[in-house]
Image (cartoon, rainbow, N blue to C red):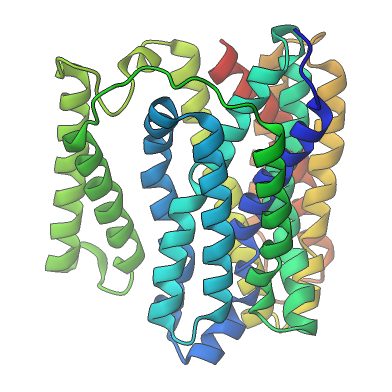
Amino acid sequence: MAVPHRGLTTATVICACVMQGLDTTIVNVCLPNIQGSMSASQDQISWILTSYIVSSAIMMPLTGWLAGQIGVKYIFLASVIGFTITSALCGAATSLNQLVIYRVMQGICSAGLVPLGQATLFTIYPRERHGSAMAIFSTGAMMGPIIGPTLGGWLTDNFGWRWCFYINLPVGALCALGIFLLLRPARPGRRDQFDLFGFAMLTLAVGSMQLMLDRGQLKDWFHSTEIWIEGTVAALCFYLLLVHTMTAGKRSFLNRELMKSPNFVAGSLLMFGVGMILSGTLALMPSMMQVLMNYPVFDAGWMMAPRGFGTMVAMFIVARLINRVDQRLFILVGFLLTAASLWQMTGFSLQMDSGPILFAGFAQGFGLGCTFVPLNLLALSG
């Protein structure tokens, strides 16, 4: 069946995902500036990143339930509007406490942008074109985190760190208008009862684990009573969530039917690895270059650009060959190349020039670009 305005709808979805991915990493490069502006310590300023990531991770499973109750269009629209408003609040924050609270709210609103964008593209494209659709979507989803440090460096250098948040306002307004005009309301799916216990266990588990990881070094890890408490709470809540998911009589917060799919489980675990590599290196590299190697903020930003170029090249190749080459081959080559680039990064020193950083960034971007589309197809279309 023909879908009207398929191209405009695709562009709207990709812009929303780019905006979400951009905000995940654009703050990394301006953290030293925010730290000076807010007179915060290193461990305090890290909450600007972790508060956003944790709240987004906790809310993401809830997005599917809300979309089933209300409809994809309305949850997608509310997420974009909320994300845009909280971006403005982050830019206007006058204290670190305000900024962290607004980042939590922004993370909550961002949780639905990527999964609902994927669901929308799978709906408007026929099954035989899902590979091409996912290649287009993945380019947008990956390019946000990739260009974030470069754009953040330029904005911070020329306009100040607050514009790293204000940049979302025009994009968010256009995305909201596009979703309102182009997406057709879908009839809500199953009216499932909300699993409050499962949601509470997931929230406590992720929150406690993040506190343990974030404060572990400061508190000397398990020599501290606080870290023991946080680690115990995280382990207990994860255990209760697992038992509840496997034994609940009614539909659980985490869909048991998805857990029965080997492709979905394998794809999710591998995507978890991709996320760790991407988020970890993007968070550490700009700070290392600015604080330890004395690079200006703009230079630290643009030196992350080869990673984005590598991702673009890889996704262009994958999009052309995805239907002719075994997807597992792309995944294998991508992870091997990524592992090689990470091994090279273990030899970084403060006396090196920019060459190793640029080469490792390109290789890592190319490797991750080779894995993203096949892994999504493996998990969602398997």
